[in-house]
Image (tube, rainbow, N blue to C red; front, side):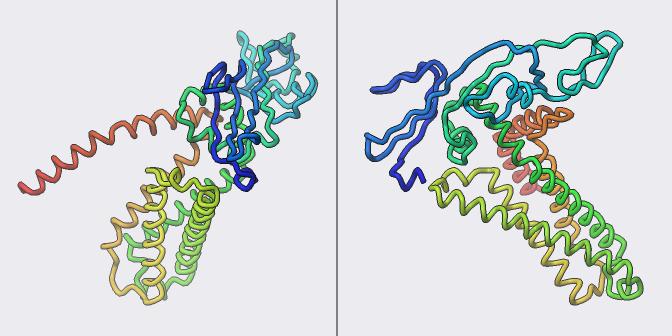
Length: 329
């Protein structure tokens, strides 16, 4: 809708930031530029801070998508989360504001920020946050709230994705065991119909997960292309995703063709391929868990992944030394 209306650029403007002919408000906001200057729009972020005696925040930030005129009772209901509270030797499970075992109600300072945009978690807004050149924007309360709200809306799909990936990982493990033990040989499959059925079911599940991931990636490319974001799509993460899909596809095609024709000998030459598929699958499952705050999964995973990206230069130089050693050998 914005593109059809003539929008050409959008940007996050920081608090009190000055640009030619414009100065942002005290909390910053989003600025949309149109081909027709008379249509230019600025959506300020109105911030307010107050102390509520009934808001319990879980994790680093608790947030909820509320109407612009939300009152205290609605803020209390939507922001209050269940959490563990420890005082001395008393540990109680607190639901809402009921803390009968502690005998008092805790107080927390809550910062309320209102973003006057029709849909604050619209893909355009989220894309602007994800690819903003100003990294300090991601440290603002508004950015954290929008990111958490978006993740909460997608949590059910992410959990389903992780469960399917784990199921396919179990199937890959069973297929790898069948390769090592020779269960894929034609005479063994004919002698054990139940084992053959299990192997066929495992292959079907692996193929289903691969097709599902491929369809999701194609939908992602379509979305980037329709909005003119293709330059942002190509990244090391997308290349790794396509490499994983390529390994998955080669493995599924090899196994399906081999089972249809019948293996006359144990296919030991495919074990490196299966090892690569299993390794990338484990990493994929781990990366899919990066957004969860429960058990501090995200805070544990993300710093390690960030550290791994910083060793790229070292790995590149090491590859040259490894090549020289192989040449000398």
